[in-house]
Length: 355
Image 1 (cartoon, one colour):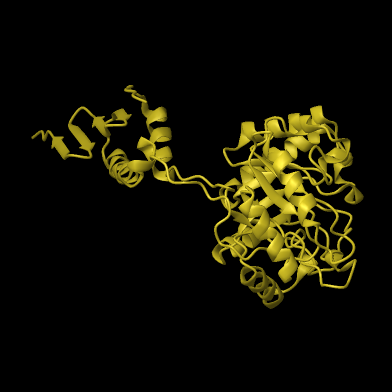
Image 2 (cartoon, rainbow, N blue to C red):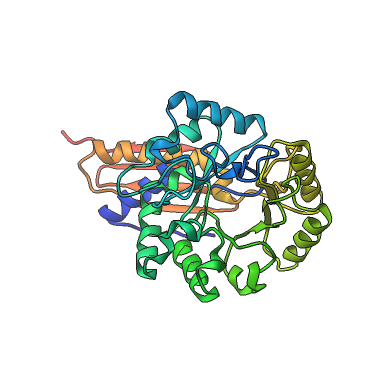
């Protein structure tokens, strides 16, 4: 990319603010979470207060010490991310209710990030909560609200849990498209067990950045999916050409059986896990050449700070020229009485005094 343009006062402020914001983005490759953390031998324990991560944002979930103990438990299981409902008004789970109208998630999301767990927001919960019954326009508005308030705090989004139980493929495609128009963070689709969900309709995944795959067969026996079934389903999903997170393959995430299946799914191409694993590396991106803006990110931020300082201190209305490509960058500011050139090779400033 190579561009040079002269901007007026308002556009100059916009460009400088973008420089100061940096260019790093979140990624779900290598995601590790404990979506369900039920107790072995208890068929319904995954619905208890500490049997899943989904309603962590609910006020009833626990006090500071209880939330800290839960976070420590997740990190001990190797988690890097945490799956969270952004709304769950009817309290179908033991951890409480999530009412975005009554609470601000900012402090809780900061708490998680500060403790090393990157939030993944699930915007529409399972059908038993009833939140899906709102109009599509209301869902679009809620997406916009969550992105506006919390985009900087989250690693990615899942448009809905078991989308195929409440929406048509076309509706899910619209939810994905609308959300992707609002954010640069990855957007995932989660369906009922099976590739394409219970309808076996892979149109649900259109436009999604990730498939959050529910294997199924994990709510009886030892609460872990059959390994052969799981691997075959993963390979089937991978044929669609969309990165697959093995999100739901066990109702318990801390047992040796659950972790072994997580390892097996990683070995067979999953880019992340949602119910435990032993391995630390699972689907992380391989190293590749950095784009120019990544290569010079720190320098661009420094140049932005210098430019903002001059912009504030001097009365002249500056003009800004930015040239950036694979060979380097150069930021130039010009006013009636001053000039600044900043690049990877030099920084030169001129100023004309009048007496």
